[in-house]
Image 1 (cartoon, one colour):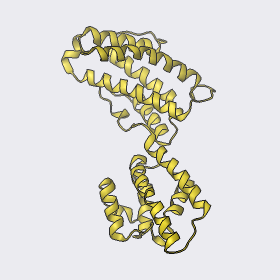
Image 2: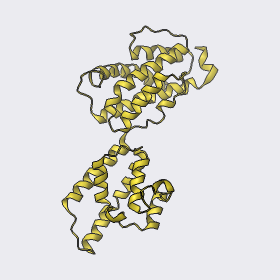
Image 3: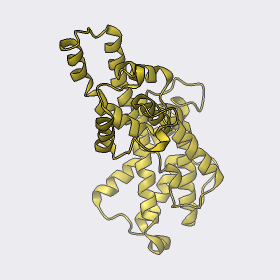
Image 4: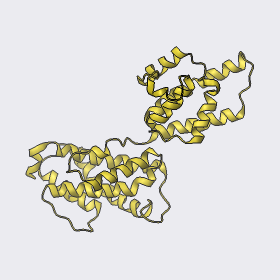
Length: 268
């Protein structure tokens, strides 16, 4: 499901000249081919005809049903066609492109960055290294919802809590114990010591990255307490929030890959 706002949709409708059922200069055939070539999607599918079979109605249904990433890919390619269409309007139809359309284009280019710029989150709730429980599942849904709504900074608190529970579960799986108030970096440090002793880290570079991640998670504690919605804070900007998410998520995925080694990892 997309996170397109009403204003973002209006901007796209303005740029793509969707009044009257049309979309730019596409014919039915070229419109269908565009979607097949861009994302391998059949825009003639019945699910995109809920409000009618016009190109504009099918595009509106596409916006309603698909993910931000998919919509972002299509919109990015479609926006590259706008300058040529404007040239046609000026040279052939002798139409001037109003300033409102240029503004809508500028805002839509930023929209594409938002749709494509967020980290991948669809697999967060599918991590299999621990016995899944409702609390982790709920946390994963909250993190995913924040990212998909274009507000990764709002999900940092939940991501921190998720990471604490996840690494604590992995440690307990290896027989480790933790105090109730033990910080994320300390929990992770104990887990790292366990997998290192088991010989599961094979390269010096990996060793450096994983060891330095203790410092990264220590800084994450600060972000959670002082720059997220955990408290009444001024929250972190979106770009840095995405950077933090991607690095923490990479660590979670690496831990999952270690655990998937199977019985070998249980001898730690």
